[in-house]
Amino acid sequence: MDRKRPEPQLLCRRFLVEGRVQGVGFRRAGAEMARGLGLDGWIRNRGDRVEVLVQGAPEAVGAFARWLAQGPPWARVGCVKTWEEHPVPSGFCILPSVEEEDG
View 1 (cartoon, rainbow, N blue to C red):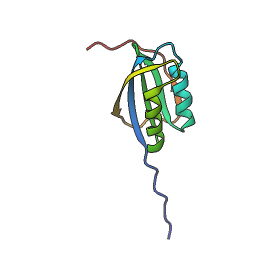
View 2 (cartoon, helix red, strand yellow):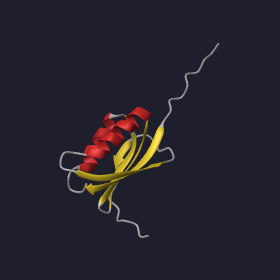
View 3 (cartoon, rainbow, N blue to C red):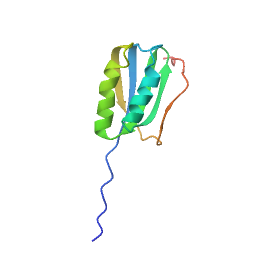
View 4 (cartoon, rainbow, N blue to C red):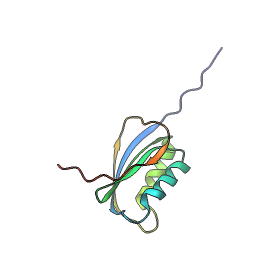
């Protein structure tokens, strides 16, 4: 009998981090943390906030979410908003900054 191993469950989440998150190494530290946890996705500045999309094992996504609530040492995170997202390609990168969208 040929038994296939079940596919691991993956979560995909988008985060918007507010507070003092610019000029404190948030993107670099976030990318390092995500890669260390084996997550796929991206991170970028969005206006005066940081936007992140990650995909991976539920435990890794949870650990990353907990890290986002603190951020790197010089950051002062005010709040983190979270949304479910569609799957993303493999790998993790820092995207170029974007201006805040209107309305």
